[in-house]
Length: 330
Image (cartoon, rainbow, N blue to C red):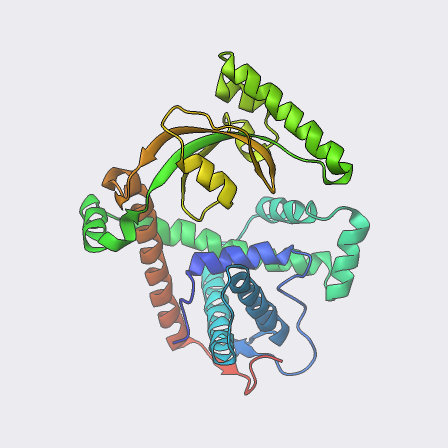
């Protein structure tokens, strides 16, 4: 069957996120033949196409180009995944599981908040041929499926310590790291609209911070109070471990040239001016089991959930009436 291109829960989350995106994944079924009918419920061709577009765009952002053959295979997989989701939704209803109005409204409000104004939100709905009721109905379906997984599937999933260890031991190449360094930085951005003056002002500011460090100032505290890197500032400029190729060349060269505890000279990159502190080096080699065990456990748990959902969908398919269009998507 055309299933499990990505995990079942991942599909649920992608659809829920897409419901409230500026280009919604789910649209009111267009007139004409649907892509499929599942126990009397149609799945619109526009639904399939928008989900396919979302997956294709996601791959493109990661640098993967989808050729025509792959695109056609993905089209069929998307439809089959949506059929599975419809079957599980119908099954969830029979089991007495339904998303609460509070859950629906919370998700609806969160999605609506992504728009700059009420007018833009309504315009987006109108352009997609949707109403607020359509969005709430779709949210109800997908939140119900998520709730079924949480209540009926997850409690029966067990991953033992032995399974975690066994996966680690049998996949050694999955848990190797290159040479890495753990660093923090202080960043002062350059105002691109200020021209040469912007560069001079930024350099002056970073030089003042450098002077304070040389006088015994605390790097983490100065990062918290002076750095303009919003993501790392609150954590004292901490960037964690970085390897070769993970950052811009100027930053990388300066970072790997440092000794533990050493602070770099002023480094200029396209982000601005930096001061970099190296905390420790990590030589290339296998990841410590204790550091990756939790990630392995989550991965194995997700695999078991996907397996259970795939088996459930097979059982539901065996009893379902599914009619597919001869042309699944536009």
